[in-house]
Image 1 (tube, rainbow, N blue to C red):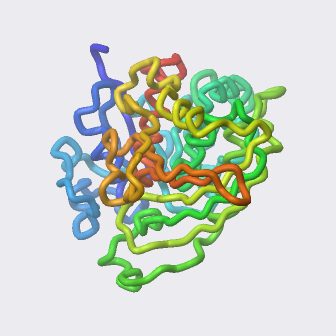
Image 2: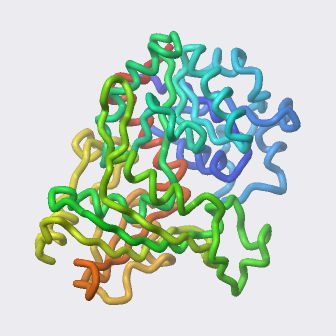
Length: 361
């Protein structure tokens, strides 16, 4: 690629927006040329807008420091400067839906980190290694929105990426029942320990709305494209509990699963180790070479040691063993702000670029 595509980050001052800046710094295909946020940040340089609230260990990338932040509500102005946008705004659901559709109707592809459009029937919700075929629904969405180039694609909930890939690799064995308890990092709430001192030495057994997402979104990921919309799968039956734990980054899941055709342990491990998806076939820049890594050690994966596997874009599993009630139990782990948030969205954009859905305007 000779010329990079121009990218706008709408919601660029928040934690996920900051991750986008970090991940797109020196990206081989994409370059941040516009940043938009609330009216209160508009008119400031990006460095000024995030002063005192930069949450990442790495410094602000030099390339974006002096970009003047625009008002995200001025859709035509922002869209006119970019080939596509990432959206990670903190607004009410109906406001996000309207904002993202407004951008799409300008002919601008929108890759959303928000949950607002995850259940819009013609909006693909994608884990690129798992359901890349769902992007074909974009044709129906474009027709509805009245645009030949704009669309919205969304990233699913960060917590499900700790267990859905491992189960997806075993779909041939037809999982019937799944129990998953997730242990979720505080960055999933956009916080660190300075912002949220109550989390030190504490566990909170509730995350608002998370259990419903964790039970239902996998079924949409495994759904089918029918008559211009995604119809969710009817199985497996999934129940979850979602718990906030005092960890900076990384969501862990303790998973129990039963299957219609129970595989052997060796079959499970082989499927995990051999699994490749479309990003690996296309050698996308952000794709992990090994999507699922299995640890033989009894005390792995560990959040602190293993969340950054494959630059935070791989997922890991461990402690696979037979269970007395279900067929198997295991532990999964993913990095919630890399694979689960900004990194996953960047990988979706790379897939859409490679498949011809995102082009220079």
